[in-house]
Length: 204
Length: 184
Image (cartoon, rainbow over all chains, first blue to last red; front, side, top):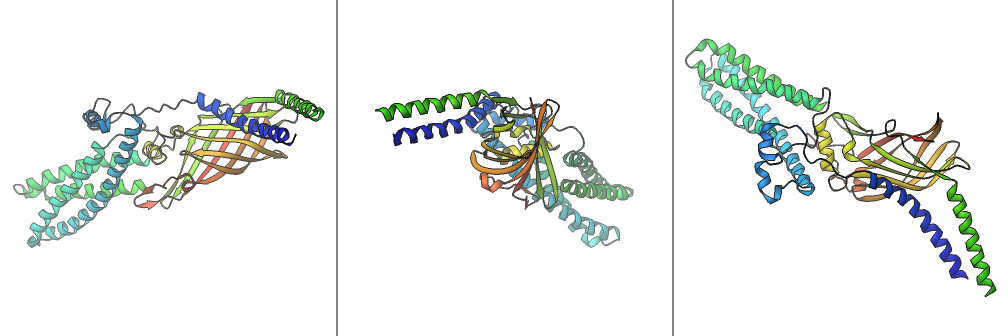
């Protein structure tokens, strides 16, 4: 008799537990688990490597599967960590280069070599850092509508990238045309200002 | 022998009663277009929110007393929009949403006093199930039941490592708030 009663309550308890679980199972069967593995739109530079038929897809480790894509997102995160660190390093170098440059403009020609060496260092870290977001695995989603800090970061990246290229071109031309000096300085200041701003906007 | 017959009759009566009760339970589905769930997170440099309008939910309503007996909720992690696709993509990475795509909640222990619900249920997130208790408010709005509420969870309870931005870790708590409309 006792066994019958216990088993009855046990059955009743289990059936009550199962009801909520059944509701959940019903919802989970409706909800599709398929998340598109790639966004519809992403940069051509990324598509070459990470598109559906990108070069990286030739390696088993990077075949387009949910598991591999999860690892790709981890790789992307690591690359963006490096992007942040190199960003700070480059900003520091730019600051030092600005101080050296202003001394040079005041006529202290003894530091011309230091200015050129620092210029080379800024270029190495800056362009290496610029390559990271261009060639990293793509994110999961298309850009959201409206203005965001990342969109501002990208707009400012176009400004500082153009200014960096202009600074370098003008630096070479100064040797033959000294009148270009103020333009070189203006381009360098624009590069520094927009670069610093692009880092600040990430904060928001 | 007589005792056994007696107990069988009792079981049959109880089972019949239980079936009668089931008939009184009405299954109500959430109106996806009107319902939403929001998460809020904080980092020393800024705070943000992500909202999902793609919530699936169902309740069992006891029509005899209009009380909610059971509930189930499923939300796809990829459906949360924080207005920043990079951040939403990082969320997929951090929560391993390609492996565990949904967050779900099921409860069969809902107590109702003056339209305040005390829900005790199981939250499944990142493949980890945890018992949670939270309060919600129930109200009737033209042919619908509106349920609102909020609760907090800790990422670390679900084996999720809080993400970092500029080398600084985000707070480990996630604040969740929801508004769900069930069609009567």
